Length: 405
Ligand code: F6P
Image 1 (cartoon, helix red, strand yellow):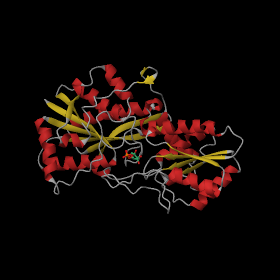
Image 2 (spheres, protein in one colour):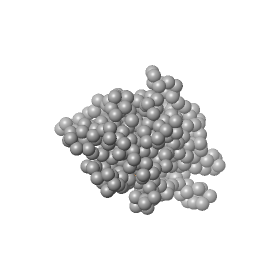
Image 3 (cartoon, helix red, strand yellow):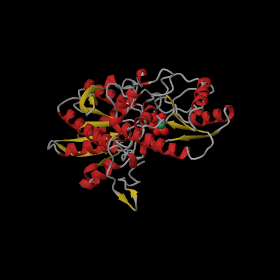
Image 4 (cartoon, rainbow, N blue to C red):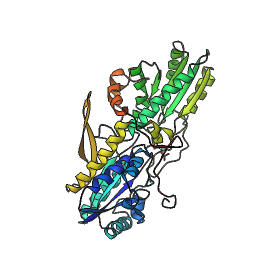
């Protein structure tokens, strides 16, 4: 008999808890697995021996369904960069102490490319020190920037939120007879996947977003102003999607970075709003979708949530088959009918690497998304969640505040 542990890391999404449910539900099926521990605040909980027994926390099928629908990370999260073991073996000793003390034979880490660095380092350390503890990565990120996998859990729900919200903004923006520009700032760090996904509205016959700017294309203020003027000559209300990761010579970021050296990105929408106001002079607003795009499960994609659960479950089977240092990935077989398989990749091929929006998805002017690319995005946003509500509000599954740091 062995126990297992699962942790969640990095920026929240709507689907991370569904992957946790996938791990939990699948583990219940195996008689060789006894306790299922949840580590609080990602790997930090393992280092500090701060774990909760999930079997005494998730008590029923109702709890599992509620957790599946709950956005963000029920166990808390971290942006903790695990040092190399030859630089700081003490931290590794603490990790091993917790895992041994709790008789943990497999550890599942739900996270993005930074978290897969932890999967890679831990599995190498365990192999080098002769410890039989399996480490498996379960992908997630709204940025959709993990290599090898066709897409990442969390992205589909974020894309559905972004497109739906932009659709609603479009309705609002066209009510007046005066010309206007609305700039919507979208997350995604250095990758334009989520910003590009807003173009799915074109598949419904909408002309918005009229302009789409992604970090994969060098940004020019002059070209942007030309683009906006041209669109204003055709449309009364111009809707612009802009990625938070666009760089401008003036620099709009605070300069603050996280433990991985990633800048906290925010403010490009406001900057472009000021540019339009001063150079064009029409009515202009900017909207930063901010954290709503990664935690709005009321617009969650059923496809995304189902896949997130399935890939968590597949992670358990992979560990029990004896594999370690692996990340579960999706391989797309077809767009229509949408079919994917779940496969296994080496964590070293995913850790710290980024996958960018293919250049072929971007139009020749570098300011919108080509129609053929929509068949990549559309399957990922299909289906709705049958939300459990209370007082008319979607209900959430949450640990008691005192459990979280
Ligand atoms: O990596 C996911 C992400 O949501 C990015 O899109 C965004 O730039 C970043 O996290 C925000 O970081 P934080 O959660 O620290 O605000």
